[in-house]
Image 1 (cartoon, rainbow, N blue to C red):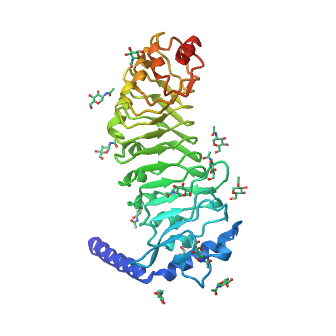
Image 2 (cartoon, rainbow, N blue to C red):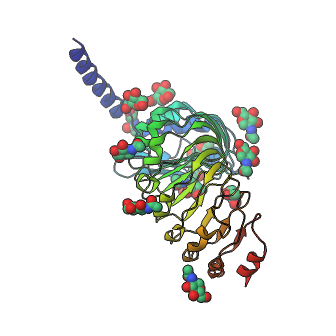
Image 3 (tube, rainbow, N blue to C red):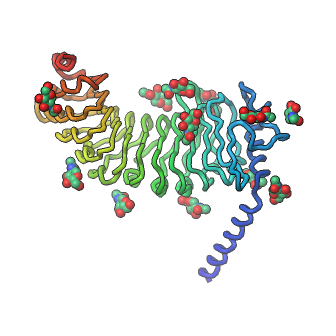
Length: 343
Ligand SMILES: *[C@@H]1O[C@H](CO)[C@@H](O)[C@H](O)[C@H]1NC(C)=O
Ligand SMILES: *[C@@H]1O[C@H](CO)[C@@H](O)[C@H](O)[C@H]1NC(C)=O
Ligand SMILES: *[C@@H]1O[C@H](CO)[C@@H](O)[C@H](O)[C@H]1NC(C)=O
Ligand SMILES: *[C@@H]1O[C@H](CO)[C@@H](O)[C@H](O)[C@H]1NC(C)=O
Ligand SMILES: *[C@@H]1O[C@H](CO)[C@@H](O)[C@H](O)[C@H]1NC(C)=O
Ligand SMILES: *[C@@H]1O[C@H](CO)[C@@H](O)[C@H](O)[C@H]1NC(C)=O
Ligand SMILES: *[C@@H]1O[C@H](CO)[C@@H](O)[C@H](O)[C@H]1NC(C)=O
Ligand SMILES: *[C@@H]1O[C@H](CO)[C@@H](O)[C@H](O)[C@H]1NC(C)=O
Ligand SMILES: *[C@@H]1O[C@H](CO)[C@@H](O)[C@H](O)[C@H]1NC(C)=O
Ligand SMILES: *[C@@H]1O[C@H](CO)[C@@H](O)[C@H](O)[C@H]1NC(C)=O
Ligand SMILES: *[C@@H]1O[C@H](CO)[C@@H](O)[C@H](O)[C@H]1NC(C)=O
Ligand SMILES: *[C@@H]1O[C@H](CO)[C@@H](O)[C@H](O)[C@H]1NC(C)=O
């Protein structure tokens, strides 16, 4: 009986889904976009008033890209228009959308759950930065794990709260996950540290915790940017991180990490930015010799060791970085070694 009704439901669901897909067309897209227009309360450049008018084709509207064959809206990019207002649930009816970019506006309110059911999305960008302020709230629902075509999720600098759903790790095409400067809490789900496609993981300034996997090099083999700063991550920074040879940015400052002494940092030949500031890192010897190999990181521009109970001599080989290094923060170290570097 159960098997039969499950099969029945499955068939029914497929039929319903197919009917919905067939009945949606460019008119559906237009209605969804007009609903968005209705929810914009402030439009300083008048794009909606003057350009998004129903006497011209949706496909000619500013910020809209259509597919020539299917004649459906595939991209909506109205970033940087300084818009105020909210996102209506109808936007989820753009059933052929691959890029949704509402970044750098002043949108507020919660992100409607329908957005997280848009299966065709490759890129979801609601980022803001501190000069303008998108102010979107709500939790990230587990349904986001169904958007299997997603390559980039950019939700930074908003007011999202709650936990990061572990279903995000189901996104087998995801390369870029940027959730920094929100109010996300709790332990970061371990599977997120195990995404072989991930190149950029930016979680700066939330209230996330947990420890790093001991073989982070095998868990995140393609990671280029790892920014976990200003959270509550703890434990040792695994020395295997020095095997993650694609790293250009390693920013772990402002957590409670308590150990990081690999003498193989120099393996990170592409490293441009290294910060382990404001943690509880100690050096086993007064020579800080674990830093010697940094001389091999010829692209290193910024090194920040501030705010750790490190004490001792910076190895003279650091002086070899004088061509690339632009900023060096070593508040607890002997200042004369800074002079050595300046030479
Ligand atoms: C879209 O579909 C509706 C019915 O599902 C139909 O009435 C309408 O004419 C269609 N529009 C276009 C542009 O094909
Ligand atoms: C809307 O803007 C686009 C792009 O600038 C332009 O091609 C189009 O003619 C405009 N439509 C109207 C009705 O102003
Ligand atoms: C289209 O509609 C807008 C506002 O509804 C109006 O200002 C404009 O003149 C119309 N354009 C044409 C070509 O009818
Ligand atoms: C569009 O979305 C809304 C809310 O998500 C829904 O109620 C409505 O039926 C949809 N309309 C069409 C034409 O698909
Ligand atoms: C969204 O727009 C911003 C600014 O216009 C741009 O920098 C960013 O790359 C866009 N995001 C995506 C995913 O295309
Ligand atoms: C954020 O949005 C809320 C309404 O959702 C509003 O009350 C608040 O002032 C906004 N904050 C900023 C900084 O825009
Ligand atoms: C924020 O965005 C504005 C406009 O896009 C840009 O000029 C500014 O440099 C950005 N600021 C940061 C900190 O990214
Ligand atoms: C989406 O994900 C949820 C929870 O992860 C799951 O229960 C649901 O069946 C999925 N829906 C679709 C349409 O795949
Ligand atoms: C990491 O992912 C692989 C498959 O991609 C799986 O076999 C392994 O158990 C996962 N490890 C953890 C710690 O989740
Ligand atoms: C962290 O984010 C909060 C807002 O969530 C902001 O007030 C604070 O200035 C940020 N801190 C830093 C150091 O960026
Ligand atoms: C780097 O990777 C190799 C090969 O998997 C492994 O033998 C070695 O122990 C790793 N280094 C560290 C510091 O974990
Ligand atoms: C640093 O430079 C000196 C010469 O100034 C050279 O002998 C030494 O091998 C260099 N060390 C590294 C690790 O590159």
